[in-house]
Image 1 (cartoon, rainbow, N blue to C red):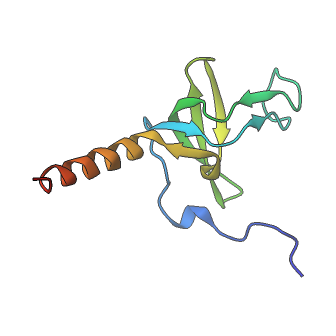
Image 2: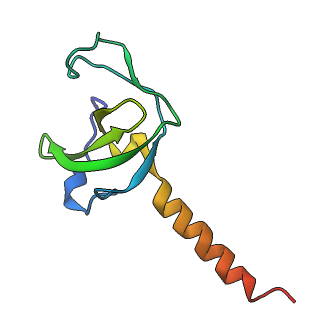
Length: 106
């Protein structure tokens, strides 16, 4: 019988994001009580917001936590990889695809 806990140890592989990388939130993030000066349940980040990874830490020796700076608010919020997507990697793959298609058209 499973308790629904995550079993994967994320820190056994390299981090999904690096400091300085531009990211977008894939979910709404509310204060779970760990963000000082804000009410529990208050929205900290909205889905679609863009920010930059400032630092990488770990939680419970199992998960990466990415300190993401949300420039428009001037705040830093700890995020999990599943809550983020890279905008830098998406742009790089799009430009690589367009470059590879340029030589094939006649």
